[in-house]
Image (cartoon, rainbow, N blue to C red; front, top):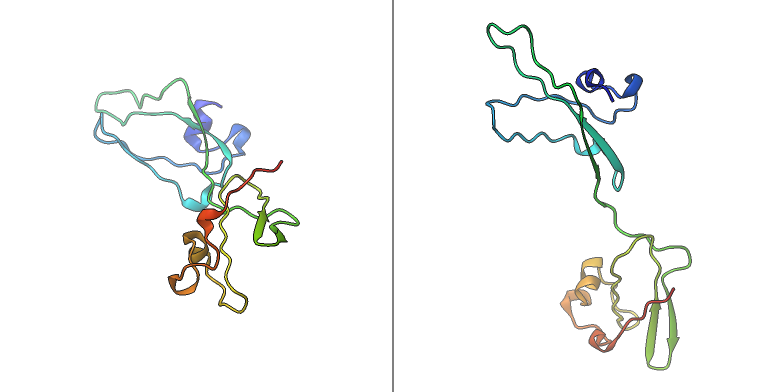
Length: 152
């Protein structure tokens, strides 16, 4: 990446940029934060950022002074999507007085469940996460007595 391409807001050959911007840094030795539009970047994607700085015109100077080398930074955007169950999951193995819940998701995470009596109103996702049924009632099954196993 060349200094002129970064200053122009283009990628190599004038293509490939996701977002480009310039912003003032005044006065000297002042921390300045510049934020891009939230929709400009894609969740969980690696990006490369090239930066170059140029000073302002000063009386008596012969033009502006621009850095000769480009600074390179890289980062990955964070995950902003919830996990999704993979095909055929979740499922239950039912027997006797126990329930075995089997799950498989597209990313690491935490799965929650509660069991309520047949005919009860379905709880919200927040109630399931809190381990409570409708109206914050205690679920039919005591979750503190359950354990989980990791299956490959």
